[in-house]
Each structure stands twice: as structure tokens, then as C-alpha cells.
Image (tube, rainbow, N blue to C red; front, side):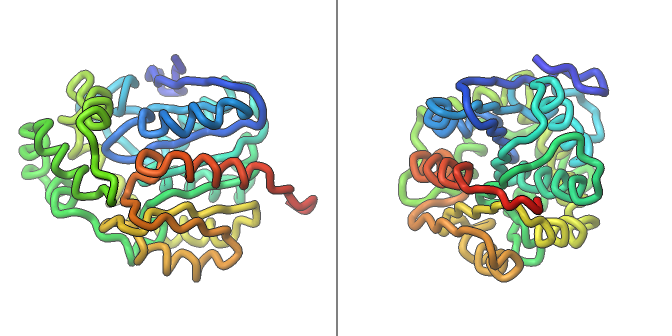
Length: 281
């Protein structure tokens, strides 16, 4: 268990040995998203997954002002605890925003470690192309959002997640595993607090997109094309912003490629980690 600089207990799991890889999850799930990918990579990599504050087995203060900046701070705290000076970062959904913040810090010489390589899974890295769900729009609404969050059920969440899946449908076992961490200590009731990252995205997306475009390290976009929120339409614009990125298109895969196509995602990460880094970086 990691104790953050603000005194919160954050759950993480480290396994394997080799090049260091840190996997950052998204909203509204938790690090279990990466279970299959982490197991695959741990055969020849030092793999760490983290539950952000408010998610999974980490502390879930309520009320609380959750923020992208604090999530980025927690990654810094984790890397310090692990004793690493350089990491290969894998990000998805909300974790993608945190990843962009970390890249911006690195470019500003404010990051206490270096990001060697970056693999980005489905997320709204191009804000203008991002299509939030109706529930996300309602959750961020004052008063109404809190009311909706207080009435969220497993059935509602399952339906919402299933609508983001591709051809391989969300199984009962997969959902039960995801729901366990989401609902632990009533974490699903915090959705209206978590979703405030969209307000931060509205304020900071230009800075974050500029940072990603300016970052010169090896970059891979491993993308589920059938994702209605941040699928093919986001990838098309991302490839214009990031023309040097290696692109892995995953047909028939929705918003959660690390679950839906774990083997392909692990292969993409492994390939990128093996990519040499230019001396100028």
C-alpha cells in the first residue's frame, strides 16, 4: 500500500522483473482492467498497476475534490516508492489524461522521473472529437449528478459498460470482477465527483494536447475502433496530431482493448518497450 503525499492509502500491485511498465486505468473502473495484460507482461517485465484515489482498493474520501493533478502526483509518489528513474507508461481513458499531465510535467522539467515510452489506449486525447455518454453529461451536472450517483446500481453500470464493448461481449465474470472494485466501500457512489475530470479537460485540453504532440519519445496508439466514446473518430484526429505514432488498430474492439483484446495490447506494449530510444531524448 502506498501512502500518498496527502496521506491517502493507494493500492498498487507489482509483479515480474525486467523493463518497468506502469499501467494507469480509467473511469469508472479500476486497475483490474489490466489483469490479463499485466499477467502476460510480467513474464519479462516489471509491471505495476495502481488504483487512483477514489477507485478500486484505494481510499475513497467523500466528499472530496478529486483532480487530475493529484492523480499525477500519486503516480510520482508511486514511482518514487518503487525506486525507479524511468518508466514505460501505459494509459487508458482517465489514465490517458493523467498521462498527458505527466508528459507536460516532463517537458517542463517538473517530473522527478522520465517517461521512456508511452502506449495510449482508447481515451479522449483529442478533446474536440471525444463523445461523452449521456450518463457522463448528467453526472457532472450540479445536484442532479449527486442524485444520480446515489442511485447507481450494478445493473445500470453493467448496461453502460456493455454499450462500450465491441464484438466480444462483456461476460458476467468480467463484470463481476470490475464491479467488485468499483463498488468496494461504495466507490460507485462517487461517480459525480470522479467525473469532474471532464471540467478539467475542458480547461486544460490545449495544454495537454500540445504536450503530447511535443513529446518525442516512442509512442503507440493501440485502439479499439468500435468504441462509441473515443474510437475510430478520435484515432483519426489523433494520428494527425501525432503522425509519428505507431498505430495498432483493433477491429471489433470497443472502449476496453486491455480487456477485450488483452493479447494484442500486451504485444503492442512489448513491441514498443523494445523500441530503442534516441540519444537526444
